[in-house]
Amino acid sequence: MNRAHPHTPHHGAQHDHHREHDADGQAEILDLDAEVLAEHTASIIAWLPLESEPRRIVDLGCGTGAGTFALLERFPGAHVTAVDTSAGHLRLLREKARARGAEGRVQTVQADLDADRWPDLGTPDLVWASASMHHMADPGRALRSVRELLAPGGLFAVVELAGFPRFLPAHAPENRPGLEERAHAATDAFHAEHVPHRGADWGPMLTAAGFTVEAERTITVDIEGGRSEAVGRYAHGSLQRIRGVAAPALSPEDLAALDELLDTDSPNSLLRRADLAVRTERTVWAARRA
Image 1 (cartoon, helix red, strand yellow):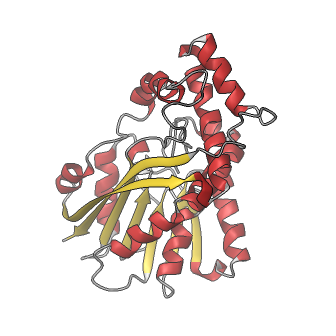
Image 2 (tube, rainbow, N blue to C red; image 1 turned 180 degrees about the horizontal axis):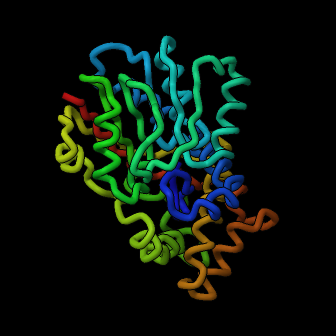
């Protein structure tokens, strides 16, 4: 499904071999992302301006199933076709569906969404794309493909993070305050090259592709670490991935401080800190096919 950058690549066509090789680490981050942000995902789905309960849903760039299972829970009469490039992610999604007794309501399709022609995905009433569209090599073409896919009057929900979540307070770590922001800044060139559409305004692009944008909403995410022990694991896995890209641009002092945060045996480990939070924004565009 998407992500050719530290935020959990699993959608587009680029670097397929790398993504598959790294699938285990990505899957863990995706699962933590789903667990920590579950309440926000549910609230976005509940907000969608649907004219009736959808029966056929396509989850584009489904990863390990965060959106798929949230959609199944919200719409108990629906069937979801879950689409991703990663065979490993789809295998995990099927395992989860079996464990939940939902295998009859889920179909998985492995597909490259940057291809000229998509496989037959049916005629859905709702297409859901969370943190996947910005990985498309040609977003305009992908949006037109979604429009052709949708049933007349169907809804397309595009959900995007404003950026990679922040976890540490500004004064942390104590010996290198501001480290997290410097690590993110060090990845900017990588992001600009590999995910140039991250942070884009999808409204004009949706309109250009023939959709009517009916609603747009930005949700501020601020989840205190005390609410879930998964926040520490989410922070650890996320910053570990960022380190791989940021390391060459960080000072030796910053790199040492980051490694201390990532050292599971360190008293200052992210897994032990009580001052973490998940801070980001998610924006959703709800667009209808005329």
